[in-house]
Length: 188
Image (cartoon, rainbow, N blue to C red; front, side):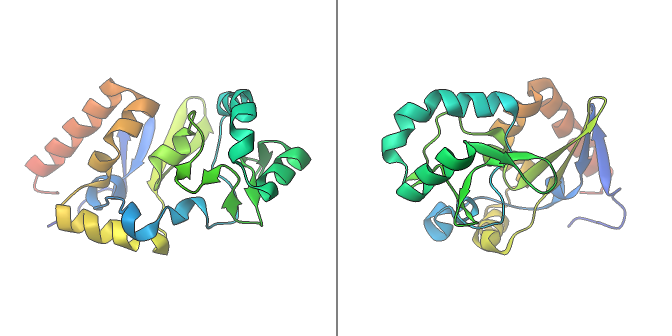
């Protein structure tokens, strides 16, 4: 049992501020139940870096025949990405909600943005090398929460590979060591 009152709300792992929900909450995607709704719902596309935008642009000719007419029209109009109201670059969406690169069998992008792989963890860059990560709760992920609890799968374990891809193995090992220390103190 997690004593959330005794845990600090944030942990510092390297230059990354980690919200404690990432180590305390249970989560495991259940695509068979949600069918990837996180790619279809929402009011903005997936956050992307300039390097990821370049990768998508390089892949566009190959993807074009697999994109729907609406996606093609939006990409012709605004490109593969746009700045959302907060000024962050995100993938183009269709109809104000669907990712343009969502296909009938998932994401069409072989250069899938790290933000997609990390979901439901969201990354915030603060400048000066400081980064924050938090757990984005969304009702459409309720089956993933139930499955995570059933499997006793902490969010940071479920997202091990994308966390390593984004922050590195050494950083992930440090996070796991911190979790073990918290368990040793009876906080987890």
